[in-house]
Image 1 (cartoon, one colour):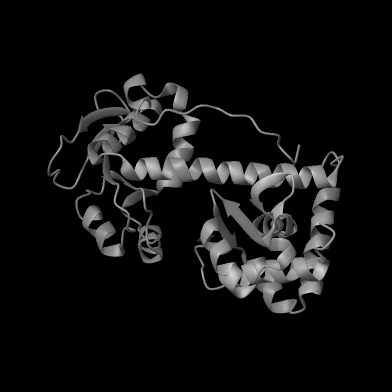
Image 2 (image 1 turned 135 degrees about the vertical axis):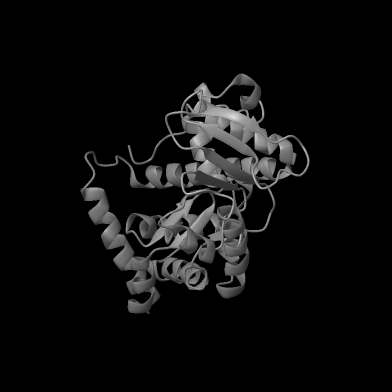
Length: 292
């Protein structure tokens, strides 16, 4: 990577940051790479594939390598293929206008992070390769899982949520049959007879668009003061809906998007009933952990 200078790395990373500065909820990495080429076009060197890895273009790999320091500096987060600027990253974008100065500062903070680790990394370059390989593997896996959930039949998605609640130790009293559900898809309790704790009412939405504040309010209108409401939406919720939920004092609402659903699924996977577990079967695959 001899042709990639600090200035060039800074130009690429600043380009990423400029794109994300207009996206408070972040962007999928594939969308970032597509837009970045228009903002910071690849050089002839970057357009070419790696000699020993046909089909792997340098440009995307270089962007990933260049953003590692920004992540360790606390400027950028990468979660399941979505990159998001932190408040510190926004301030850095505003403060360091020069690409080289910008990149040097992220590198300084990266070295500080590295020095604070209990064990030093033996090979910085090997760690960077491991980090990008793991990043790409996680993105590819999550992309497949999210697409799989999006194509799942609505009733199966509902059963999946009921199975997760069972695996978490709740007692599922009722799951809505296919057809109109009257507002609830699952009803559960903390004990078998529903005596000890509040009733848990769950609404499940598999659709592609985010749940708006009106959709959330319609769900809350069906809850009594003693109920706990869980709204599971694969697509997530708008910012207004999230703010509305946080403002509630008498209504207890938990909102779960596909990422949170998947995290809970993997955490409780072994305890989920076998029938429901088959709806989203998983297999562990081990990769080198670059920070260990």
